[in-house]
Image (cartoon, rainbow, N blue to C red; front, side, top):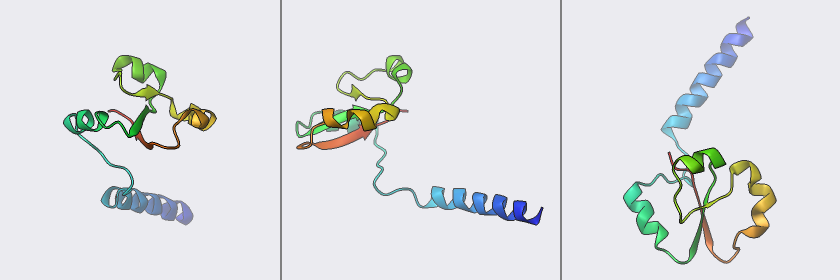
Length: 89
């Protein structure tokens, strides 16, 4: 039973640290910033939401490739362009 407490405590500490130190390669942007980014011609934007989520709020400039399909569709993505992956919330 004591191990369970340690596991729960460790998990809680992990969640707190994850909130305090977010991944530095993930960048949250505003709608205004997204509009500016979409004007960049040297990028390819991919929306990794599910088809249902995409249908609810589709952005025409984003190509929808659900996250679970991404490994199979990597060959469809440009290797020359900087890829930006978007999950709109």
